[in-house]
Length: 114
Image 1 (cartoon, rainbow, N blue to C red):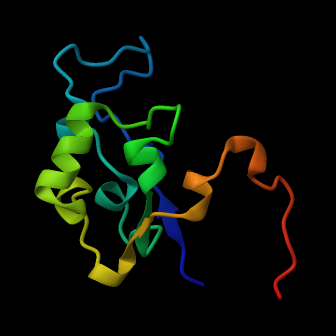
Image 2 (image 1 turned 180 degrees about the vertical axis):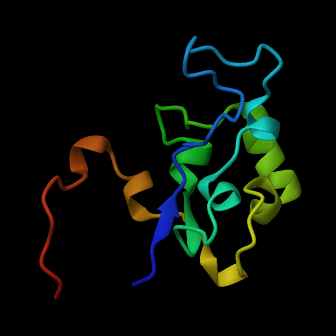
């Protein structure tokens, strides 16, 4: 089975002090934090899924990425942004129909395949 990690901006902060529950005051998230594929060997997943709706937002709602993160992602590309060792087919961008539907039109139960 091949597992793809959906980007939800879950990262590891190596500077986090568990005893005091504090982070480094000099921490810059994109530069200092690490993804699981950078810390664990072998990587717990074979690739990443990136939702365009999470990056760019959907009508009436902002995405989870700041303007600076979004601009950097588009400028440097997905592989450099995620600091991955993934082949092109292991980095999937989901433009997805669900990101273009009104929230009340999104089904909340699974459908049977045709």
